[in-house]
Image 1: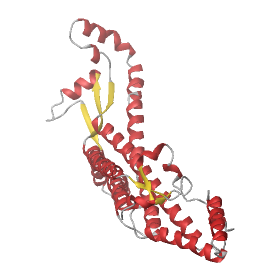
Image 2: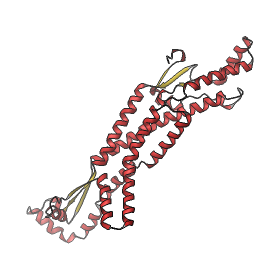
Image 3: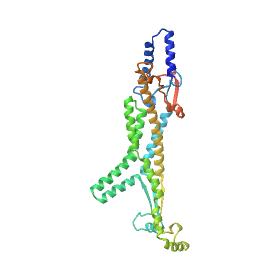
Image 4: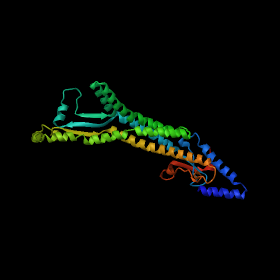
Amino acid sequence: DKRNLLSNYKHQANNNNISNAELWSSVRSIWQEQGQLNQQVSVRNYIFFLEGESSKNCAKFRKSVTVLIMVLSLISVVLVVAGCFLPLFSTEFLGIVGLAIGFHGDVGANRVSQYSLFGFIQEIIEISYELNTNNDRIGLGTIGGIFLLSCLVVPLVQVAMLLVIWFQPMSFHGRSRSLVALEHCVAWELLGVVLLGCFLGVKRMGMPATLVNEQCDELQETFDTMVQYGLLTQEHSKCIDLLSRLEIGSFMTLFAKLILMVLTYLVKLAATEAQQDSFVRKRRSLALSPDDPYVMIAPVPKHFLGPLRCLLDVWREGDLSW
C-alpha cells in the first residue's frame, strides 16, 4: 500500500512538474504532522492512521473501552483486598480426634479452622516471636513481608500503573519506562502462586489422616458397633479424618487474578501498539529517500484490526474534529 501511495505521488508530481525532492519533502511533512499529533498524549487518545487499510483513515480507542478499564480496575481492587481478608480455605477434624477437639475445655476451641492470607502472615510473625531468635525473626518476618508485598501491595500498584499508562499523557520514552515498571509489577505479583498452593494443599491435606487411619484398622469394628448403638455418627466412625475445602476468599482471589490478567493484557497491548506506531512513524519522517525500509512499513495496530477491532473507533481524517 505504501509503495502504491508513493507511486501515485510521483505520477502526480510528473503531471504538475514537481521535482522528486519536493515531492519527498511534502510526504515527509505529512508524516511529521501525524507524528506531532501523538506527542505527549495518553494511550486512550492515541490516533492511529490506518494507511495499510484505506487512504487517510484514523482510529482511536472507543470511550467504552475507557469505561471498561475503569470498571475492571475497581473490581480487581475490591477483589484483591477482600481476598486477603476473607478465608482462603478451611479444615475440619472428624473422627475421635475431632470429637476430642470439639469437647476441649478451652474457650473457643473448635474442630473447624479457617485460614486467610492475613491470618497466615500473622501466624508466621507469631511463630517468629515464639522462637525468640534474631535469625528466626528476620527470616520469617521476611517471608511474611514478601507474601504481603506480592499479594496485596504489588497488585494494587499494578492496577495503578495500568491506569497511569492509559490516562496519563506521556512521551515515547516516558511510556517505555512505564511499560518496564509494569513488567516488574507483573513479575512480583504472586496471586497465582498463592492460589496454586491453596488448591494443592486442599487436595493433599487429608493424606496424613489416611495414613493414621490405616493404623487404626483394629478399632474399626468397635467404631461400627458404636455407630450401630447411636454413640457415634458415621462421619466420626474412625480415628481421625481431615476435611479441607476452599472458601470464598480463594474464589475472590481467582476472579481478581483473571480480571487483572485481562486488564494487563489489554492496556499493555494498546500501549505497545502505540509505541510501535510512534517509532515507525518517526523513522519514516527521518528517512532520506523512498527506498528506506521503514518507508515501506505501514504502521497499523495489527492486533486491533482482527477480533479486537470492536475496540477502535474508525473515521475519515477529514471528519476529525480536534
